Length: 125
Image 1 (cartoon, helix red, strand yellow):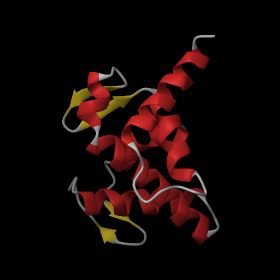
Image 2 (cartoon, rainbow, N blue to C red):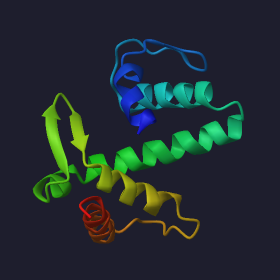
Image 3 (cartoon, rainbow, N blue to C red):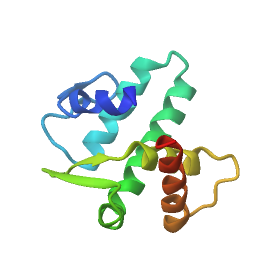
Image 4 (cartoon, rainbow, N blue to C red):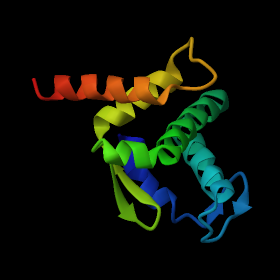
């Protein structure tokens, strides 16, 4: 969750160490550069930083592509300006799916939803 909270600031970075000036652009390319730069600052091992950035971007991409579905299910709230509030159970579910060593090429939308519902049940116990 610390990385998620940091993204509010990371999205405003106009300069990166690795890629130089990205300006105020909020394109996928600029944001990916910012995320990679952020994770490189967090982890001294460059391979680990790249793996963590890739995982983070995969989770965000999956949630973003399926935001409508998750919104209808009450797990994502659209805040405007391309920003979302994502239920922590959904973040856990998608993170689990993408970090699984036997992860399929395509992560199943309905399975991640059902896993998120299961995580939510544990939150209320």
